[in-house]
Every structure is written in C-alpha cells, then in structure tokens.
View (tube, rainbow, N blue to C red):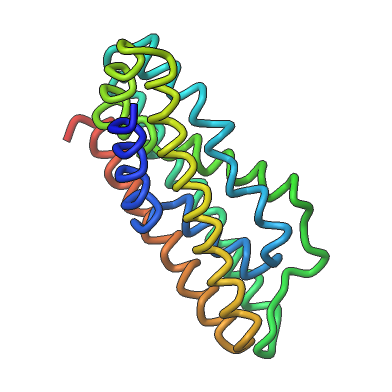
Length: 208
C-alpha cells in the first residue's frame, strides 16, 4: 500500500509544477479576485476527475481519439474566451493596482474552473495512459490500496496548487505593479495554449 501512496505523490509533483490551462486559469483568477475567492476553484478536479476516472478506467479501456480531439478544440475556444476577458479588463483599467470590477463569487470561480478542467484533454490522457493502469493494479490488490494511490495523488495536488496560487497572490499584494504584468503574462499563456489546442484539435479532426 505504501508503494501506491508514494506513486501517487510522485505523479502529483510534476502535475502541480507543469504549466497547464487549469493552473494558468487559477493564476488569472487569483490575480483578479484574490486568494480567498479563488481557493474553492482549486478543487474543481474533485468534481471533474471523478467522472473522468469512471469513464476512462472503469467503463472504457481506451478513450476514443475523436473525443479527445473534440475536447481539445472546444477547450481551446474556451481558453481564448477567458484570455479575451482578461485583456478587456487590462484595457479598461489603469494604474498598477488591478482588480475586476464587482468581482465574482467563489461559486462562479469554481464553475469556470470546472469547465476549464472538463474541456482539457490532459486529465483524460493522464488517467488513460498513466494513472489509470496504476489505479487498476492497486484496486486489484484491495480497495484500500487503490484509495492510497488516490490519496497520495490528490493530497499533494491540492496542497501544491494551493501553495502556487498563494505565491502569485502574495506577489500581487507585495508589488501591485507586478499584478498587471503577471495578469498580462497569464492572459498570453491562456491564448497561446488555446490556439495550440484549437490547431491540434482541428488538424486531428480533419485527419491531417
């Protein structure tokens, strides 16, 4: 059981540290709305990954490729939409201190995070190719062993992502001028990843 717990921990570390649409979205949220309102959005994978795990690991032996391509394309469009909203915020506000007018509730932040993660093909690929087989082997030994793997993975994932967005939040508070810069870089990241997903998804769906 300890081996599976350790495997979950080791798989979670690069997941936290590697840039992804979900992580970049959280950074844009914390820079606009602060740490407290963004914190619930961290747990979006707890909502989306459950059905993904059931779909990929317990129902399907392999996710249809066309579905991943369609998710990639749709997710790219949504990321471009989010990046556009950030650019609009940057253009209509002046000065170093930047916060979205009116803000948004923690529930709205969580809802958007759920959409971002559900339209991201990475969790489907990750659970199909990497984590799914390990989880199935653990469950074949015992339910507790499989749960130990999930505990190790999600424990490190949620703590790690919380630390990451807190650091960005602190950077924005300590140096308000950095808030605009970091938000602009995050918007650029969202746009670039969105364009890459649209391009890759469109080419795959077209059979190119």
